[in-house]
Length: 127
Length: 253
Image (cartoon, rainbow over all chains, first blue to last red; front, side, top):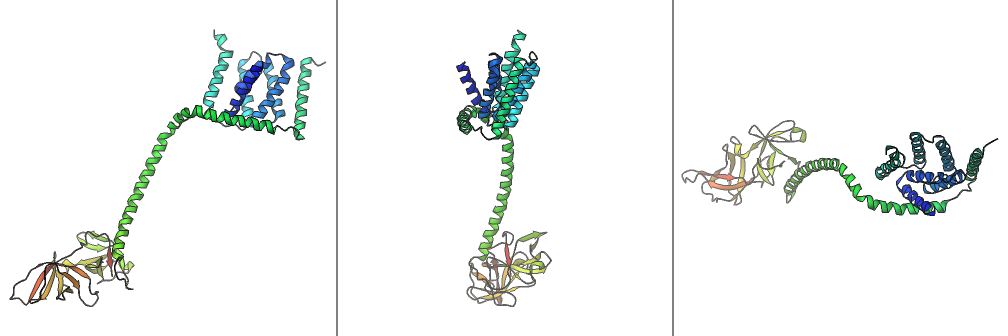
């Protein structure tokens, strides 16, 4: 678990350098959602905290956003398309709040995430 | 009653509210951690820049065509300017030659470019510039002709070889006096006393007369035509050192 947290921090530091925290959000959310409800809400606060540190944002605002995201995400279980849309919306809000700008690295960053998302959610169905 | 799950959500939102309140009271300070994260991000950025440099170069190649076109346009513009500068430089050199080693007086001097039109010789300055009929047309102190007719923006020049009906009093460097006129294609130094000694290569200058400065160079004696002792006078052909049709600027005074 500690290794996972350390790896997630490295991912966040890299993503904070180049733009959207898509991998960090997706991986960490999946990681903590497996740990059960009791642990999940407090973990969301920690996620919000590290995001606010790396993106120079407000901690309460990030916590508020993540809580809302979590609430709606739970309601959309099994609807991958809507979950993905919600996830995109969260990222866009973060991008707007952190005043992120499009750069060269996005050409690798976004396709890599899309490929990962496809592999995790759809490849098993296809098989 | 509220379920355990809902209780947790309410608690979480309450916590968020408390955090907002603390932020409002300015108790949430993470400057140290933010600076640490920014330093880390800076290091990451340099590292990523190094990795992405070759891709960045490839990306820049898309702009090369536009850059090349821009450069080509700028080059053409520079070439056009260069030609302009060359022309100005040439003109400047000519002006220097005219002004150098010349005793300037207070008389009005006009500098103009020769214009050749329908085998007639003009200068690109007329009554507007103050050119008067009878003024001398010079190049570096050499008399080329006289202004015959003045128009508004140009003036007709009567070159020395074309002075068939008129003439100029002239003398050589050895004080041999005569009369310079033209025969249509040559300059003749006529009315020279038969016993006067003139030699080929001798320089001919203007002599004192009304409306023309003394000492202006006309040319040098190229050949002596009338060497017949029976005649009272003799004639020599004068060769000019400067050609009106070849100079780019002349002086009118």
